[in-house]
Amino acid sequence: MSRTNPALALSAKARRTGEQPISFLMAAVQANPNLINFAAGLVDPLTLPVDTVRRIAQTIFTSDARGRAALQYDTTLGLASLRRAALKHLEKLEQKSAADFGVSERDILISTGSQQALYLIGDVLIDPGDIVIAANPCYFVYTGTLASLGATVIPVPMTSDGIDVSAIEKLLGRLERENQIGRVKLIYTTSYFQNPTGLTLSAQARPRLLELARRFSRHHRIMILEDAAYRELRYDGPDLPSIKSQERENQHTILTHTFSKPFAPGLKTGYTAMPADLLEAVLHQKGNHDFGSASLTQHIAAEALDSGLYDQHVRLLCQSYRLKRDAMLEALKRFIPASSGASWTYPSGGLYIWLTLANDLDTSRSSRLFQACVDKGVLYVPGEYSFQPVDGPAADDRGFIPKNHVRLSFGQVAPEQIEPGIERLAQAIAASVSQRPGEASPTRDVLPMNAHP
Image (tube, rainbow, N blue to C red; front, side, top):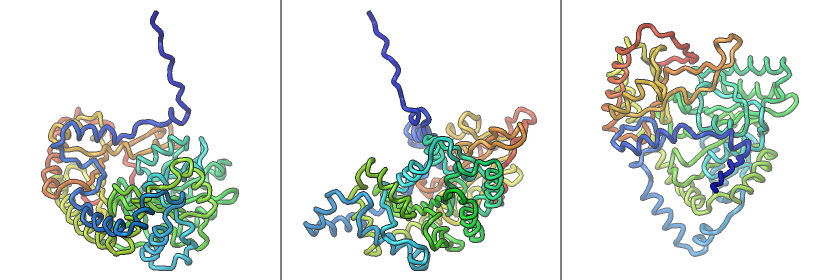
C-alpha cells in the first residue's frame, strides 16, 4: 500500500520568501558562458587584490599569536582593531571627527557583508504590516528581504536628485492624517550611485530627509537606513558627506558600508554605524545567527585599512571602472539613436547605468526583446525587478509596474566586450521596434529623471 508524503509545513516567513530574480539570470550565464553579461552586479575579477591579500595574510601569520587570533572566534560586535580602523576610515570619508556625528567604535558593527546588516536591521525593527519607504526603482535584493519580513514597501519616485524627498514628505503627511504613521519604521535609500539607476542623493536632499525623519518621529523613532555600498567607487562629481555625518546625536540614521565592492567580495565583511539601542537589539539577533563574523577576514580587512593597501586598491578600482563606464556610455551613444526614444543615466560612480526605452517597448523576462538579447549573446536585468507596485488613487494606478527599463552593469565585463555587447543590445532593440504589433498602449514612466540621450 503506497503512502503519500504529507506537505512540509513551512513558516509564514518562509512562504513570504520567494526566489531572487538574480538566480535565474545567473543560471542563464551558466548555460551559456559566452554571454556578454551586463546583468551581474559583480566586481571585475581581474582587479581582485590577490597579491595584496597574499601579502596581508603573510603579515598576519608571521606572528603565531596573531595567527591564532585570526583563526579563533572573536566577539559578536566584531574585531576591535577593525572597528577602530573602520571608524578612522569613516572620519576620513566624512572629513570630520566621528564625535561630530555621535559615533564611536562601540557604535560600529562588523557583519558578514553589509547584506547581513541590512537583514538584521530589518529583522529587529519590522513586524508584518509595518511600512518601509523606498525609491522606485530600488535595490531588488533588499526589497525581497523586506517582503520576507512581512513589510509593506511603499515606493516614492526616483529622480535625478535621488529618492524624491518631497514625495516622502507628502507620503508621511498622508500616513499621519490616516493614523498610519505608527507603522512607518524605515526610510531606505542607497545614497551613492544607486543600484539600479546609478544616481546619487543630492547634497540638498540629505539634510531634508533627516529633518523629515525627526519631524515625523512623534510616537516612535523613524529610522533612515543609508546603504553606502558603492560610495567609494566615485569617478567624478562631488564627494558628498553621508546623511549620517549630518546628525550629531546618532539617533535617526544607520550607515552601512562594505568591503565587497571597493575591495574584495570574498571577504564577506561589512561595517555599520547605528544608534546604541538599535545596535544592542541587532547584536542579540546576530548572536543567534553566527556569534560573530569570520575572524580571519576581519583581520585581513583591518590590515588592509591600517597599511594603506585598501586606499591604494580603491584608487586602482576607480581608474579601471571609470574607463569601463565611459566605454559603455560612448557605446550607448554610438549604437542607440536618440530617434529610438531611448535615454540613459550618467552615473558619477558605482557599477550601473539605467536605460529607459520607448514606453511601449517591453524589456521583461518574458518579452521578445529579452529573448532576442539572449539569442544574440547579451544579458541584462529587466527593470521591472527593481520596482514596487504603485498604489495610486486612481484605479488604473494600482499595481502598476513599468516594463520599459533595463539595468546594465559594467562591473565584471571585460573592457573589450562592452562595445560589442551594447551593439548586440541595440540590434535587439531595433528588431523589437520593427516588430511592434501596431500601436501598443503606452506604459507610463514613473521616473522623473534627467537622462542623457
